[in-house]
Length: 438
Picture 1 (spheres, helix red, strand yellow):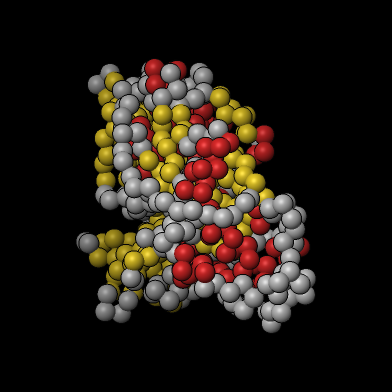
Picture 2: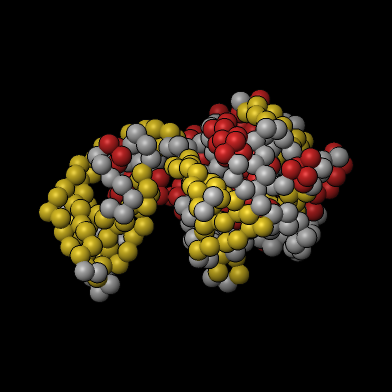
C-alpha cells in the first residue's frame, strides 16, 4: 500500500517547471579509471542509484554549494544507502534542516501516482488531537472525505471522531495505520460537554486504489444581494484543471466578484495547475498584458544554462496551457472571473503551490488571509526520474527518481538571496513546465 501519510507530509511538494537533463552517454560503473568492471561490493543497482543521486544533487540542487563537501565525500562505489544519504545531506544548519523535502526514491511509479492523486486509500483527511498527553493517547477528527471513497461509503463526514484503531488506542506508534493499513476497524467517538466519549460503534474499512478528486466543494452564496463564491481545493493535480476552468466559468456567469478560496488542506502540486488558477483569479488586465506571476531562482550552473538557451525563469499570467506530454490542453480565456477580493483560508496544511498562488496574486488582487501559519515551503522541486535524466538509462534505474529542491520561488517585488556556484557538469538541458511541483 502506498504510504499516503508520507505523501500528505511531502505535499509540501510545490510546483514549478520541470527541468530534465540527459547525459550524452549511457552511464556505466567503473573503477574510477574507465574500467567497465566495477570494483564496488554493492549490487549494481546500488552503484547506479548512488551515481544518479549524486549527479542529480550536484547539478540540480539549489544548495549544491552549501553541501559540496558532502557531495565530494559521497563514494558511489562503497555507499550502501543512497536514499539515506540524500536525506542526511539535504541542506541544514546544525540540527535544523532548511530543506525538509528533497528525497530519493526507488519507487518512482508510486510517487508519480501520488502526485497525480491516485493511491491506495481510505479516502479521508484527518487531524490528530491529544486526548491523554500522559499516555500519548490521541483521537482523529475527519476534515473531509473524498466522494466515492471507502470512508464516504461508510458514512464518514467532516467532524466525525475516531477513538481507536483495531481495538487499540491511537498513539504515535500506530496512527499511521489510519493511512497505511489495507484493512481497518475503527471505533467512533463524540464530543460531549467538551469531553470525547465513545459511541460504542465500530466501522470496518478496506482501502482501494482510486483517484481522489481534490475539488471537494464549489458553491455560490448570496449575502445582502452580493454573490460570493466558495472553492475548497486540496491538491494542485493535472486532472482537475478542466473542472476548475468550468467552475471559473460558472462563477463568472453567476456574477461573483469575491471568492473564499479554502486551501487549508492543500499541500501543493503541479505548477501548471497553480498557473491556471492564477490566470482565472487575477485581474483581466494583468492576464491580458501577461504580467509576471512569479520567478524561479536557480543555482548558478542552471541559471547560466537557461540564459544561454534563452529560457526565462519568469512565469507570467496567460490563458493558454498546452502540454501534450501530460495531455493538458486548456484555455482560461472565458474563465477569468473578474474578482475584486479573495479570502484565502489557510493553515499548517497549506503549503507550496497554495502559498505561491496567494503570494503571487497579492500584487494584483486584494487578497485577505484568514487562518493560521502556513507550512512555509518557499522553494520549487523537480520531480525527476532517472529515465528523464539519462538518455540511455540503465535497466537497474528504471524505477528510481528524485524530488530535488531546485529553486527559490520569488513573488513579484519580493527579494530573495541567490546561491552562487560554479559547476563542471555538462548535461543537455531541456525545460518543460509539466513536471515541476511545489
